[in-house]
Amino acid sequence: MKLAISAALIGSAAAFAPASVSKSSTTALNGVPFNKPSAALPYKGDKGAPATLDGSLPGDVGFDPVGFSTAGFAQWFDGKSEDTMSDLYWLREAEITHGRIAQLAVLGFIVPSWIGTFPGNEWTGLDAYSYTNPTEALDHVPGLAVFQIISTMIWIELKRVQLIGEQGSSRMPGDLGLGQTGFNPFGLDYSPEEYYEKQVQEIKHCRLAMLGAAGLWLQAVNSGKDIATQLGDALVAPEYYAKAGYFLPEGI
Image 1: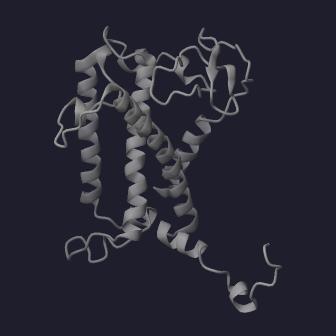
Image 2 (image 1 turned 120 degrees about the vertical axis):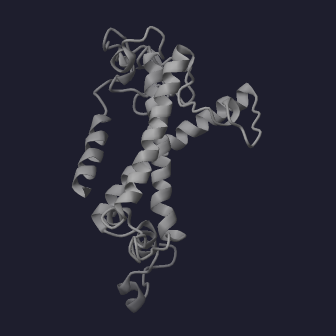
Image 3 (image 1 turned 120 degrees about the horizontal axis):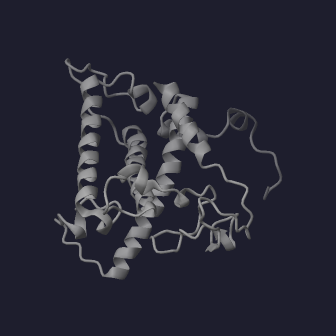
């Protein structure tokens, strides 16, 4: 399982390898020219992004070197419907969904090693939940616990698909009917400007979490240690320094 997941992560990362597009490129993909300004390095310039990235989406900085936004994703995912989200909104739906899962994954790496794990019992095994390295925990956690996680994810996905079908082209990508747009136990009431800023914050956190989750997983597979142990080892003075001291001149 570890090898399969690692291979999947490497494949996903390879899919985002930058294409050879210059800052002033006007090369068209699927009939869409690269003629929009981009604020993303190294494609920053007046014509560094495809025309599909018009800046209307929160967090859009014109980064699409591969040209994903030029593809007809709406036709692939919902070709039978006459009222569906645009191609760009389908991509944003996927980005937010993956990002939210990645944020939970990052917490899953951090919380067990820094805060603690659930207690085991005779039925699950006394040490079933005591493994703080997630790659190791997958081999020891009870099968029903994994089934519970997968079932919850499937239910959320089915609910999301239902909302996409019901809301059609009017759907706001990533909206699950929670918070200001639906069930709102905390009484959130943002102005349009504040709500847009919250959307920008979420997509930035999503992107960071996707990179972070991939890095945490690969490092855990490589080291066999949980994140707290890895950080602790990094902050400990090397053995040779403890024995010999530090003899470089002051200020170096």
